[in-house]
Length: 381
Image (tube, rainbow, N blue to C red):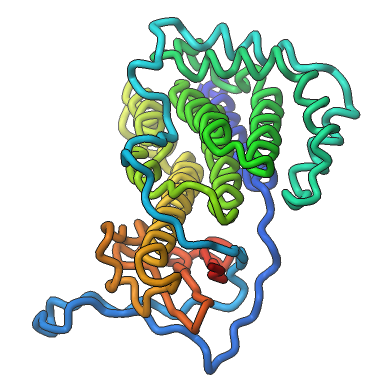
C-alpha cells in the first residue's frame, strides 16, 4: 500500500509540475495598459424587453492587471465560400495511417543545433515587418524534413499513443514544443509575405497536432497540446492584422468547442481509481482534484481565446459592411452571430471610442487578473 500511495502522490506531482511548466512556456502577452477611469466601458445587458428577472446579471468589473493585447485591424469581408478556410484538416484530406510514428520521426529529425533554437526564440518575438526573410527561410530549409513529417502526421485520422505509465513523462514533449515553434515561425513568415493560404495551412497543422497530442491517455501530454493550440492562437492574432488578410470568422466558428478537450483524460484517471475501496478512492480523488481543476481552467482559457478571436473577426466583418467603422455595441453586429464568452456565458465586455475599441472578459470566479482577457483595437481603413 505504501508503494501505491507513493505512486499516486508522484502522479499528482507530475501533473501539477507540468501545469506550471505549460504556464511558463506559453508566450507572454504585452504588459497591461491602464484604462482611464472615465473611459471604462460598460457591458450591454441584452434585450431590454425581457422582464427584470430574465435579464442576465451585469458582468463584474474587469480588475486592474489584466494583460492587454494591442491589435490593429482592417475591414474584411467574409471569405467566399465560407468554408474556404479551415483550421483543422478536412475529412477528405486525412489518411487512415497512424500519426504517432510520424510524430516520433518528426521529433527525431529535429536538428541538434542550439543556434537554430536561439534564432527561432528571437524570431518568435520579432515584429512581422522586421523579420529577416532570407535568414528565416534558410532556417526553415534546415527544418524541412521535420515540417514535412509533422504535416503528414497532422493529417492522419488516428493516433495510437502508448499506454499511460504512472510516474513517467511521455517521450518527445520538448521536441513537440520545438516543432510548434518552428510551425509558428513558418506561419509568421508566410503572413509577412502575404501568403495567407499557406499560413492557414501551417496553423492548421499546429492545431491538428495539438488535438492529436490531447488524445494521449495522460494529462501531461494533453497539456502540451493545449499550450501548442494557444500558441497557434497567437499566430492568428498576427494573421488578422494585415490589411489584405482574409477573414477567418467561419474557420474559427467551425472549431470544436472546446478546441482541445481533456475531459475524457480526467475521467480516465478517475475511473482507474474505482478498483480501490471507497475510502482509499476518495483520498486519491482529493489529492488529484487541484490538478484536475487547474487543467480545466487552462482548457477553458484556450476556449475563451478562440472565441474572442472569432469576435474580432466579426468586428472586421461589420467594419467591412459599414464604411470601415466599429459597431457601437456588439449587439449591432447582425452579419454573423456573436458568440458568448464561454467563461461568463454572456457577450464579451465591449466598448468603442471612434476608431478604437476594447474587447475583454473578466477572470473566472476566484482567479487572479492573469486569467482575464483584454484586447485594445485600432481600426484602420
